[in-house]
Image 1 (cartoon, helix red, strand yellow):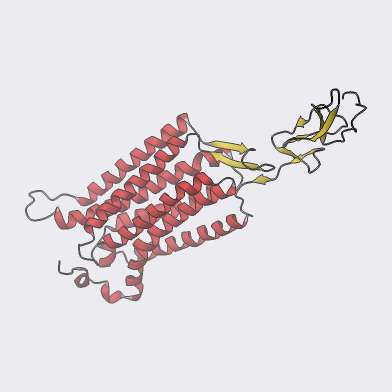
Image 2: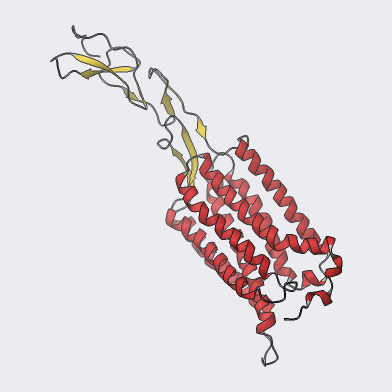
Length: 339
């Protein structure tokens, strides 16, 4: 604390002495800057609050900052949790329907094992969204993006394999071929290869740039943002881009297969589902970059749920509608339409 000037009033707590350039040896009082405080009179400088603290209105003391993260009690967290439960139950019901009617033509026509794989993958996608909600911890930060990418690559590659199987059924296994190609084996190998590609990215990610819980005290003054730092933005977008590339490839294959008999293949439904997928994740990138705190996490959870729900709705709901409400179409004669 310096000596009191005869030409200036005493600076109260929350202020500091600032040199008055007009009058030598005099000073004026300046309020402490953002993030600083002073609890005495005539202080030469203000003190900095700790990272998890912020000064009160008068800048005379530091208070604990409010924490900002997507919690289960938050309105967004509650809404997303409810949607996750609803979508998970819907996928379980659809899987039950497909298993119950597994011997019917509409289920057998498009490789029912791939349908089971897609449905189970979507169920896991819905559940892994829960990892993004709640106070970020070391384990959840490490698992949330990696598990989602690995599960989602199985779903997308299975849809792509299903579409390729449709093309092979009409174009590859014709009478001119001396050896009949097993589309089932090819689809399994294709899914494994796609999974290995994403798995390699995730292993590199976990080894060299593992995600970790982080604090952001700069983006929102007075608020401490708790979030999961992805470790490497390049690897994060590479893993996401790998799935997006498979989705785009799936869209192109389905587009070329859509002219095949409608009730025999799912190319039309897959085309629309991939349009939804691509639209969601293209809009995700600018929204994710421009938001902070709980809203950044909310954008990511919304993208996961919207894209997964799009796959579930466009691919499987039309089949379930025919199975339950139009059983007269679920016969072998109605599946074969003149090409």
